[in-house]
Length: 118
Image (cartoon, rainbow, N blue to C red; front, side, top):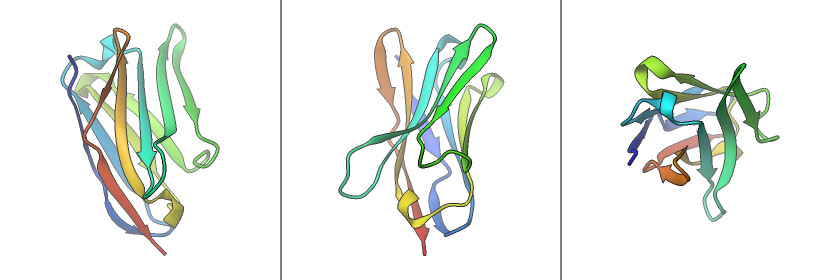
């Protein structure tokens, strides 16, 4: 079983930055794919960024809406995945969730609120 704890959310003005952290209860070297999702108010949860361990290095994908502004990374020594969010927009307001795909099962954190004011 994997426990995920997100942190780093908060209130920020448009154009600002935040860094979200997702700490895992196991060594994340064992987790092939970790992702960040978000759920805006009144909307469905959507994929934001994915990082997958590959033979030649990490494979990273982003939603079109965040390309060039967000960056996902992982620190295996700290068992933590990060989401650096720059140039934030009011439409980035959402609850952000960390996800780990481990042994054919999806694990989720409790979420962290990000609010971007205009």
